[in-house]
Length: 114
Ligand SMILES: [Cu+2]
Image (cartoon, rainbow, N blue to C red; front, top):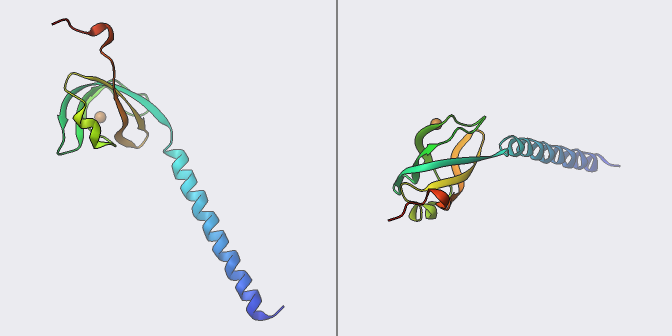
């Protein structure tokens, strides 16, 4: 084996180790941020410009106490469907206050007759 080949092999090993390390780190981050929690709340305002909803939300253990605040949404299209007064549910993740996959709940029993 000549010296050039040995250097080349060392370089390949170093690159592979680097790639493996990156993969481990990014997997660790994804796993840490991946705990999906379910959020429920009542919409109080829709802000298309800020891409956010003001929601009176129920407490989500390990994520947010019950409070009314503005939340960014992952998909701006939902802001055209959601109206103040709607009950919504969404998926949220630890360390991230964005509402993901917002869904409007059917009115069910609380439906008001007009
Ligand atoms: Cu909050």
